[in-house]
Image (cartoon, rainbow, N blue to C red):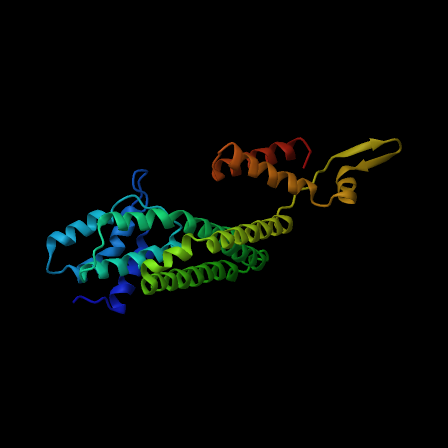
Length: 268
């Protein structure tokens, strides 16, 4: 009776952590990375059955797309299912596919809101504050902090997925998970809003003659809505990305272009 060891599971997790986005295509996205992560598992379970090994690679090479760190729980669940199948439990290929398709969406929602919406912005804000005076420790803090936190989370969820197996799916796709995703989304929005207010600075140099005096437009704006121009720039960037589907790189170039023109015209 084949049995997976901690060493097998760690190899599988490391393959996923290192190579989940290494072989991307519009047809399969992370499928090859997922199949690569399963190689230590199926090598151990089907070392005496080359045909079953081949079939396992095929069923793990179907379309897969999930936030990699939080999504590692799917790899753990799949490893547990492969072990049960190798030991005689009736688990067909369709069940493996169903597990992936039913969990990819919920896990991506949680992963994107926590990793992209909370962890990265918070680490970047701390790193930028440290590096603003020229201290290189800010860059190192971000690199080490992200790798440590995201790596630990990915490893923990992989092992947890393996321990719980298919029993964890109800938790992932259930009502409690939906409430958790909503809570993380709200928290992510608050974090992004706070960071935007703290780090997005925009002011105007426009001065309007008013009789014998000159009205400084920026002072007038600050008197009733401090940071208004920064808020407008954030909303404008969101509009371009979310509504017009313009890439972040192009939006950055647009903002640079607007800044250059504004400075030349004396607006900023």
